[in-house]
Every structure is written in C-alpha cells, then in structure tokens.
Length: 407
Image (cartoon, rainbow, N blue to C red; front, side, top):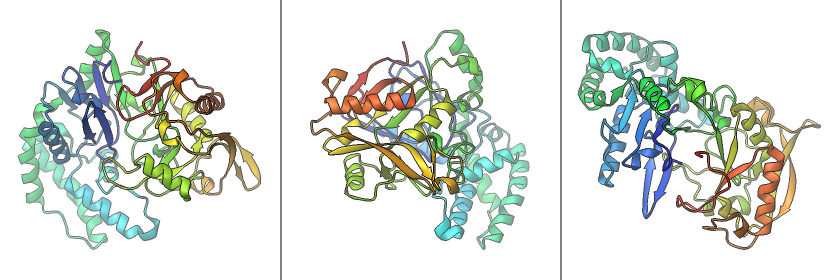
C-alpha cells in the first residue's frame, strides 16, 4: 500500500506496536515510524494522536540508518502537539503491572498508558514544549507533583527533577527539527490530490472504548481516530481497509473465545512466527472469529478486507470459523462488549475442509486450492464485505489483488 501512497501517517498508539516489513531481501522492524519511511520518495507523518518516546524514536531512526535508510526532517514530520513518553511513564507502567500480580493487563511496560493519562489530565509534556526551557520547567513541576505521589504509594523512588530536565534539554535539539504543523501538511497534500495512507497500530478489539475492556490499549484504534489523531477532517477519507489474519491472534491478557491450546494452535504459532515484533512476546492463536470481525467492520465502516497469512493454514486438515457464541444458553452472532461477558462465551463453529496444497506466493485467486477459495468466500459472506487483498507470503508482491484501495 505504501508503494502507491505519497504520504503515510501514524495516528495513534506508541512504540508498543511493531510492524515487520519485508522488501526484497531486507527485513525492517518498525514501532513508531510509519511504514512508508523505508521508501525514499514518501513523506512520513507521526500525528498528534501518537504518544512519542523521543529516545525510542531516535534509536529506531539510527537502526534504520544502519540498514541504509536515511530519516531526515524533510522525510519525517512529527506533530508539534504530540505528547511525549518520559522515563517516569515507563517506571509507573511497570510498577502498576507488578502490583497487579496475576491480574495484570499485559501492557508492554513502555509507558503508553501513563502517557495518555497525563495527556487527558492536561499535564503532558508535548514536543513543542521542548523549545522553551522556562515553559518546560513549569510543566515538569506540575507533572512531578502527580508522579512522585504515585511512586511513593508504590514504594518506588521519586523522580530526580534535575536529571529528567537534563535528559529533555539534551534530546530537544535532536527532536525539534522534526516538529511540524502536520494538519497543515495533510491539508496541503489533500488539496494537491496526494494519496494519503493512514496506518493503525493495534487491532480494533484493543480500542479503549470498543475493545475487550479493560484488556485494551490506551488509545482509540478505530478508523475514525485517523481524523482526530492527525488533524485531518473526516471528509478526506475515501476507503477503509480492514486487515485480518486468516486465523485469530492475541497478545497479552484478556478473554479469547476461539483460542487453541492444542497441537493446531502450536502449529499456527510456529508456522506463522507469532511473536511480537516489538516485544518478542508469543502471541496466542485461535480459529478465525467472524463474529468479532463483523463488529469490527461495523465500528470502522470497512470498505474491503485484506486477509493475511493465508499460507499459515496450509496443511491443516479441517478449518473452523466462529460464526457466533453461546452465552449462558443464549446464542449471539456478534462479540459482546465487556471482557467479563466475553469470558463466558462458548464459540459456535462452522467446519470447512482444509487444503494440503501450498498457497505460499500464489498471486492469482484462481491459483488457490478450491478449499482455500471456499474458506475465503465464506468469510466474505459472513461479514458482508468483499475481500480485496489476500496475502500469501511475507514479501510485498506475494499478494492477490482483487481490488486495490488506491485506484
């Protein structure tokens, strides 16, 4: 997708999500940077809806530099009003998870949640604040009143103000050249008929409002957040692509009705290399959940689907699709709202024949085994949304294009 785009925008989340890109023989692991950054002729934008860890971002930029990718202020723009993740956010994140014990949510421990809390409470340090030391010191004082009180409550050491101020003033000249009014950049691009790709960072069932609360991330992950998280009005969007694997995965805690803990689950995890690109944590695997997908489609106004990792199902004797749930004796065809109710759900399955032929690298729909085509057709029928893209391998050209999002 980024190959056909002129501008690629991240609009929510932080460096808690990872994307692995394979271009030719080179593999790039990205966390904060938009996927288009590896292409020399694309403009990359980090919107105001993202929380930015300056040190993690600079480390990611340096890692790409060593791979031959130059990330300059001309190529990367960061919203000047983006909130920053500071070391104290990471400390608080880890302290809370440790205090929860067995009831931990499964955060990445990277300070994302605490940073969003400070943003909502109007005490965040934003990128633009790094330009004025007097303003920065005043804001730090207010921030530390809150955080030091929390750390005392957890029995942790308080934040050293001078040390934090030094760290921020040291990183300021490295970060400020990237600062920009990105809403204006996007408005100019839209008026010039540029192709703009908005890139989400987490799945919809991790949305703080619409996901399996409280086992969610700390931001809105729905497509509508692209407008608020970038400063571009909703009228700029013409197509919403819903991306889902040919089976279901989840990382961290929370209920997972279709989870497989048997040999098939282990097969999918191994063949699909289901480990987080950012954290390395193993992902839980399960059968495809069409009922959950239906709710995601409704929440996002999905125009078409992209089914990835179809090849991982090669060799599975029979494949199952979750078409609904039984909840305390009652049937439901859509995912319930709360984690507590979801934990009671017993999946209702349809079983279809699997396929033994390899689908790896297949580039035409007719080249897929009939059982694989039937499986995809059933997903489209259950969700009432066309499948526009099918991924059959990690390389960008191992894709079957039924209809391209960028016409």
